[in-house]
Structure formats: C-alpha cells, structure tokens
Length: 360
Image (cartoon, rainbow, N blue to C red; front, side, top):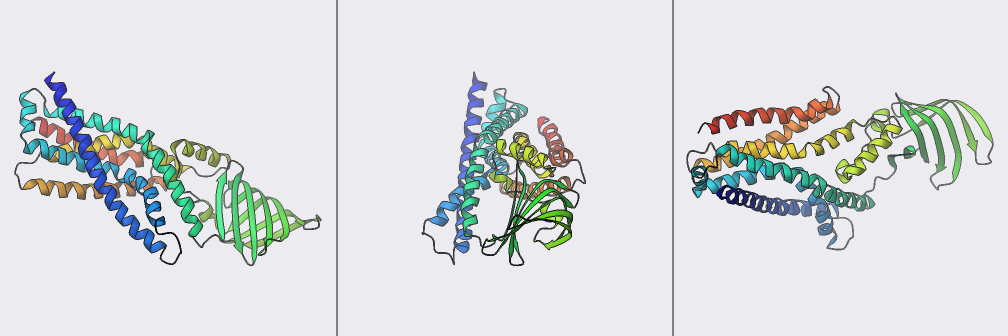
C-alpha cells in the first residue's frame, strides 16, 4: 500500500515538473518566435496580432523537438527535490530501491512518449502546416516550385521569359520518365506542349533526345535534341522534401507511398518516421540518464553543476543525433543503425550508471 502511494507521488511530481519546464520552454520559444516574426514582417503590412498568431502555430512543433531534453531537465529537478527533502531516504526505508524508483520514472516516460506521438505530435504537425501555408503567401520566391503527388512529380519553373509546367510519372537516374511539359509565356499564354519518354538532366540544362511538340494550333512535330534551361538540377529534384514536421504520422505513410510510386527516394521520410516511432524509447533513456546523473550528487553545491552538465549533455546528444542522422540519410550507414546507434550508446552509459547506483 505504501509503495503504491510513493509510486503515485513520484508520477504526480514527475508530470508536475514536466509541465513547469515545458511552460518555461514555451515562453522562451514564444519570445524568440516573436522576434523572428517581427523581423520577417518588418517590411510587410499586416495586422499587429499576426506575428503572435503565427508564433502560436509554430511553437508546439518546437516543443515537440525539444521535449526529450525537457524530460531530462524535469527528472533532474524531481531528483533534486526528493534528495533535498530527504524523501529518497524515506523511499529506501520503506522498500523502494533505486532501481524501483528508476522503473517508475522511466516507465512513466515511456508511456508519456507513446501519448506524445499519438496526440501532441499530430496536433503540432497540423499547426505547423498551417504556419507554413500562411508564411508562403508572404515569400517572394514563387518562380520555381515542386511537389510530388500520387500522379507523379510536378514542377513549376519560370525561366528565360517563359513558364514551364512539368509533370513526370517517375524519376530515373539523372532523368525524368514519361514527361509532359506545358510552356507558357510570362503572360500565361500557351506556347506549346511537349511529350517525351525521357528528359535528361545535365546540371541546369534539360535535354530531350526524342519527343513530340504540340503547337497552339494543335499541329504535332517530332523534336530531337531539344534543350532548355531550368532552375532544377538532378540534385535539387532528388532533395524535394516538404517540411516533414508539418505532416501528420498517417500523412507521412501516404507521402512515402506516393514517393515509391514515382521511384523517388523515401529515405528522409523513413528516417523521420523511425525517429517518431523511437520517441518513447528516447524519452525513457533520457529519464534514466538524468536519474543516473542526479543520484551521484554528494554535496549541496554540486547540484547546480549537475544541472548545467545535464543541459550541456542535452546539447551534445542533439548534435550526436544530428550527425548520425546525416550519415544515415546519406546512406553511409544503414538507416536503422544510424537512428539507433546514439540511443544504444546512451543506454550502455545508463546501464553502467545503474549498476553503480544500485550498489549504493
């Protein structure tokens, strides 16, 4: 009975600390966001509330990205509280060992991680999409755009006083397959349409070895070695990813399906999906790591040092994940290895720490 009371108390205090730290991060993110939006709209005439509205749409996505580190800091603060108040000794005297405390906090973090990817992540993605959708109305660079749908690759490319609307069913090696091009002048008058089985991409010069041009009078003529300039080279086409944090989890699965249909690389989407699915495990590891750190406190003055160390550790972990992410997305390591390697390293460090504190 006593153990259950302690368990409820620990869970309650953990979530209380997480809410407090999340609120602080929200305020900091809000202030930074306001400064960024005010700078963005400095030369644009909008209502005074607009930057505030946009920040409210964008901050939840930022909180999701930083949440593992919020958990780490929250657990640190929780451990300081129960150590300072002598509660840790009381727990041990009533049969609640170090490992049981870790089990309660880490399992709560895992469950919280599951809830986050089911509800808050998808909610923040919807808000992020709205944020980006509004912001793009105020960006000046709309001369070349691209997207991938279930109907293939679509490109709008304004260059050399003409506008090219391009649709390709599939993407090949340095080429597009089953291509249709509609060419308009800058006043959107139709010039001609082109159909070809293959359009080869050589830097920013596209070449059609053989195709058919349909003129405005519906006359058809065969074309050979037809060339035109484009803002898009193969590298740019091969890295056409939307802001994946603005897409819900089920939207990511649909996007992956669309990309597979056009033979487009899905490695970015796969990495993002795996990162989401590993989120509960990451929160669990961060909570264990935090407890291991704080249970090594021996002196009153060392607490602030451990908190600073925890923050620096959070930054280090972020860049380690970023580094392995780049390696995985460049396919220098298998994607799953690149994603899980940092977490495996952190888990090994945590296990070593667990063995040490269990001996205390």
